[in-house]
Length: 175
View 1 (cartoon, rainbow, N blue to C red):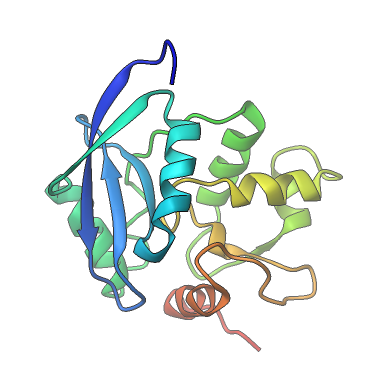
View 2 (tube, rainbow, N blue to C red; view 1 turned 60 degrees about the vertical axis):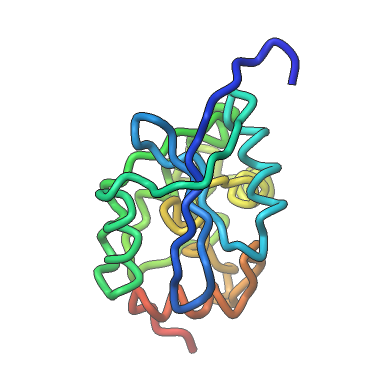
């Protein structure tokens, strides 16, 4: 990357019931990226796109508060991630969509239409879906809580079975 500052970020690996998570944090403890290890290439691509920096990843341990929140979420405390600080780039529309995702409570879902309406663009369902798919901080920015208008589980970068598990873990009744 040209004319972009290099930034050293910490890459931690956290075991979960649905696979190993890659957790990337900065020196201030903000989460910059989170994805499942089998999607590492995707995570790195989104991190580079939304970091605003030229990231240098160093294997290490995330700040204990962040790591504990991730572990607590997967242990059943489904609101444990609510207060975790994330820091990403993105367009103003993407940032609005990601903020709207964080406003969806654990145990609830929204359709793409509802997500678009939440950011003041009710006809921009496709754009909201694209922004949802560009989310570099999976699970914490809960893109898995968006489903089809008819209640079906639709695309999830981590795979439909993981999406089903995450929603079930949060108490969503899937018919």
